[in-house]
Image 1 (tube, rainbow, N blue to C red):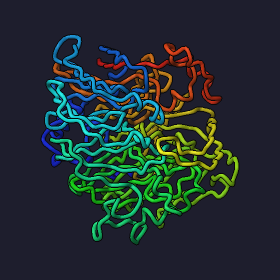
Image 2 (image 1 turned 45 degrees about the vertical axis):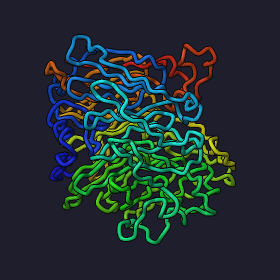
Image 3 (image 1 turned 90 degrees about the horizontal axis):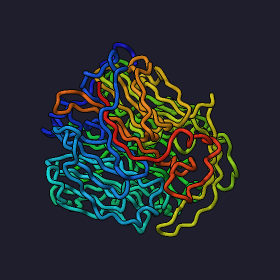
Image 4 (image 1 turned 90 degrees about the vertical axis):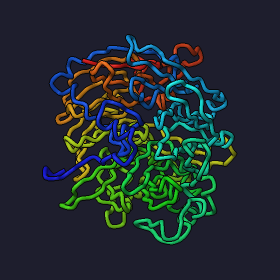
Length: 584
């Protein structure tokens, strides 16, 4: 970004009194802290001069061994924590010594969901709104719990477990709408997003991410795709009605612009993984969609990876910031895609402004700013007829995991993100659809990308599309990011380090071994004692629970050999479930 660029975080004043207040104090009341999904805190007690003195001040074991994604919430004098399955909700009293448990809510969550979940039984967090804690259960329900008492207020079934739908995402609450979506792209679901009524839990609208206009809530005069035209784009771009089992799930984070009254979210992979069974662009899988939250009406959509050949979900965070690009102020949306490109869009209309690779990319040479489409490398296209296609970068784990939300600092004008340096070979095979069973058809072994390291944490200039600094890590980097007004950024590593770095230079200021790999998202808050603290989950899992071998000692059958590219990860971490709080 040029030094003259004017960058500002979205004002949240219109987003509700509780969240407006949170912007001024030390609370963290929604997953990304603000509707712009910046994961930025104005707290500055912990800064680049004193962060070396950070040390743990409190821990708590959740009692669950699984991937701990997401982040705690802090509202007033209470911290709220949601576990992986069985999705227990804890409330801790921050006003008393030792942060004792105020209450615990144990929902009834079907164990059948364990077998239907793709990649561990994770949960990505909860949302506070109007005295309620709202979150999703793995078996396809959304619940609302009284924030002071822990009493269940309502419980709504939103997903069909029998079809392979599970719910792992954190909801977003906008005014009186609770926005939720379902995982299940690996099961050939008909991807959707829903709006529920906050007070009753009743489903108000359902919008599919592919298929005919009527199913997608595309209305004449409301929807305008920046690079496409015509009716039923979500159906016509799928040969032989393959959209019916086309995937396009929603399991990542959602942003909201109160001025434009639009929510922004990404859709997941197209199904099956053999692209020859679904010829066409396959809209709107691997895309960003902008909708009005009240009724779900689609306003615009942009596809990052047309005819997804590589499982490049686009469900990662959409960060909203006002940028100046080429001398022109822009209401921007910034997205680090699994496909390895970082995109800067005009969030009012979806037009592409900047697209540059942030990791090693071989499947495409560039993205054409005129057409919005990638310039493909023909030798890297996949399909059952093409056999084993080698050396595709990034791997289907992504240049960044969609479950690792970046952060943005208005002080440095930089975006901060975990990355992965992985490539893959890809052999597609014909898949047969059977409801509720995997609908994939792929074998995709991974290897390290150039340089031999497997991950990094980086700072990115989204106005110019360039990397400013990078900390290379020996293993894939899978945590979310946190940026603060103290010019400190925080992230965790797969081998169990929690790190604080200088936001301007990347220099590591402090690190602490937290006992289990970090795939959760750091957050910060001001406690009733007036001090700033930083919290994070340690809990190895997610995709890595499938690839890392013997990391679960309570299971005598877990004696699997690790993946070739990750042979020694179990020397550094095991599964766990711990909340850590750090302070000065």
